[in-house]
Amino acid sequence: MVRNTLQARLMATFLLVVTSLFVAGLLALAHARATARTYQDRLTDLVKVTELTQAVSEAADVLGRLATGPSPDRTLNELNQIRDRIYRLRQELPTATASPASARLLADLDAVADSFLIESGAAAYAFLGNDLERYFQHDREASLTAGYLRDVADRLLASEVEAYREVYPQVMRREWTLQNLNFLVLLSVTALALILSWWFARDVAEPLRVLAAAAGRISAGDLDGPPVQIQSTEELQVLGQAFNQMQDSLRRRMAELNEKVLLERRLQVQEMERLRMETLLREAELRALQSQVNPHFLFNTLNMVAKMAMLEGADRTCSLLETVSDLMRYSLGKLDQPVTLAEEVEQVRRYATIQSERFRGRFAFRFEVDHSALGLHVPCMTLQPLVENAVIHGIGNREEGGTVTIRVRSLGDTVRVEVEDDGVGIPPDKLAVLNAGAGASGVIRGHTTGLGLQNVRERLQMFWSRPVSLVVESQVGRGTRVTLDLPANREGGEPVADLGG
Image 1 (cartoon, rainbow, N blue to C red):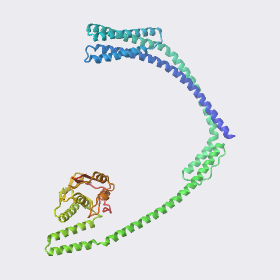
Image 2 (image 1 turned 45 degrees about the vertical axis):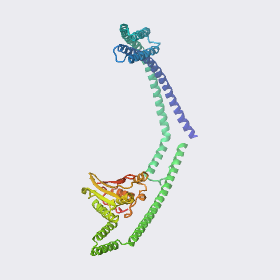
Image 3 (image 1 turned 180 degrees about the horizontal axis):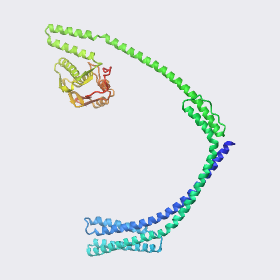
Image 4 (image 1 turned 30 degrees about the vertical axis):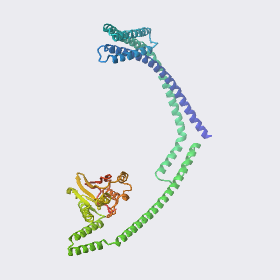
């Protein structure tokens, strides 16, 4: 079969190329490993000789410091460690050399190292016995021995290098021969691969060109073109059939996607219509609820009662009624508009006046206001809920009452507002919930505004279009402080319409 013939040709060519390259690679690898192993062994031997020489030099220096150093015990311990290393390095010296002269020098090196160990040991023993004369004598002999050992090591290294200089040309000739052989193998394999590539390309290139042209047409968005017709080997015929099936599948998939998009658009239109109807319904419900108690009727009634109290000479009652009227007018009339901090502070003063009259001096209110910060715009009903919380939950349950302090300060790019009371405080578990902002609207809620702490936090974040710092600090039995850090410059353009919550 054609399929098997094409597969056999590909496999035979692949095996021939791989086998040739594998054999050439094995030869090169074996030679490289043998050469590298030889040089590595010689290099290791030379390194051992160098390490022995350095160890002897270090031992000679330490031995010389034994009588003059600040810590003889530590110096003696260091000397013993180096002598142990010298003994180990002697055991690791090479057993084979490149020439007879190197062998003799190697034997001399070992003998000199042994002499140094003997002299250094004798010097250390004399030092321990406080025989300084013998110590200096053996130290001098050890230094001379160390110098002689360095000389022997240098001659040994020079002898090894000279011996390998004679061997190097032979190694290079073998390397050159192997490189030429590898080059011939590579050239032959390359020529064979080029011939077989042209042979395969002649049978495969034309069907692939047809498939590439059809793929380009489909990538351009044309899914309605004619099916691909391939008259070639069985593999390429199967590829052409799969390509035609893919084209049909894409055509059907695109039709399904178009239908799905149309359906989603219809559902989106229906959803928008439903949301619009729900919005209109909620607006109608709110208007119906608002119409149940007409604020203007309530304001007019309070004004009428205030005028009657004034006519009857009850000036204090008249002033209190006017304060209540202004308080309610502010609460119901500006919830959807931003106000200044000055207006918020004035509203809190009204609330403080009413509470002071209501509870006959049980509650005291202190205002520490930086007037340069009062021009900042904030959502309506920002401060009053905080003051209400301090009154109701902080000092309201105390028989002796308490004090609520309202502070407004300008801190450059930030305006800080603090509402502090000296009341009962908040338990740690509820305080953690408040600062986390989870469920806080149900934990603390004012009786006049109906707005909780979480409501204030959300309206501030919506007003500035980013998180605003609202921190509650409290100690049970000592009071609570709520701190607001408001950006002095608001970003985001016009106020949002639903600031009232």
